Every structure is written in structure tokens, then in C-alpha cells.
Image 1 (cartoon, rainbow, N blue to C red):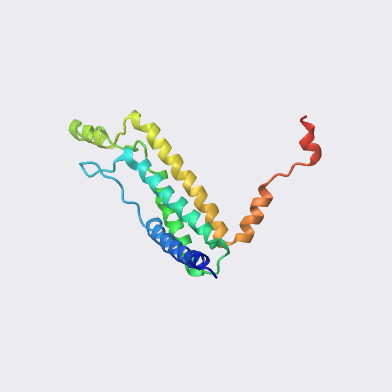
Image 2: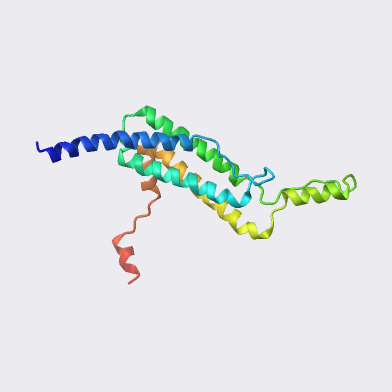
Length: 183
């Protein structure tokens, strides 16, 4: 065996080992609570939530690509599969928190009992201006799409045969006659 092919063989082994290490690092992120960006007053910075969702989405996409490279869904490494599913479940739950956040809070204030200054303060701190609605809508959409991908991936890791059967069941096959009917 030549030195180059020896290097390549060792390189493949090292790459697989380091890929598992990178997946574990990403799972550390995916299996943690979101650290929300705060403004100067200590409130959640609503305008930066989309960046949070996109960051989690990128961690998810990177972990998935690397998991596919090492064929995790076919692997016998049950420990890594369990960690992967746990990380995905945590991120799913964190994205749900973003999905259910009120864009504009619901207010139940008895105007007769509240003084004008307290009422003004409640609306000043809880009301999101319309220029943020597009951004917050996109944030919710991205969180939803990420959660949809997570559910599909958990199904694949948990029971690959059932997931593949469901995919086949949902595919509509066109007959040859149907394919030529439109022409």
C-alpha cells in the first residue's frame, strides 16, 4: 500500500471520528434552552428572534448533514441516536415557545381600577409596533418549518422502516396513461 493510500485510509477514519465529535458539539446546542437576546432594559429583543431561530436551524442543518454522512439512521450507535433525538426534542420545544409567543400581548385591564400612568406603562412595554410584524411573522414561520423538519427526522431515526413506508404511501404514482393524457 502506498503512503498516499495509507494517508487516505487513516484520513477517512479520522474524519468519521471528528464528524461524530462535531455532531456532539452541535447536539450540545440543540439540546439546550434558547438564550434570548435582550435589550437595554432586559426585555427580550423581539427584532432579533429571527436570528435566534435561523441559528438553531443552521445547527440543525449542519448536524443533519453530518449525521447523514456517517449514516446515523442505519448505525447501530444507539447512544448517539438517543442523544440526537433528545437534542431535536429540546429544540422542538424551544421553537414551540417562539411559535406561541404573542406578537401583541392580550391585555385584561380594568380601566376603572388602573390609573392613567400605569395603563400607559403597560402599553408602552408590551405593545409591538407594526414595523416588526413582518419580522415576527417570518420568525414564527421559520420556527414552524424547523419543527416540521425535526418531527420528520425523529421519525426517521426512531423507526426508519415506518418513516420510509409513510413516505411511499404519501407519494402519488401516475400511470403511463395519466402522464400522456395532458399532451
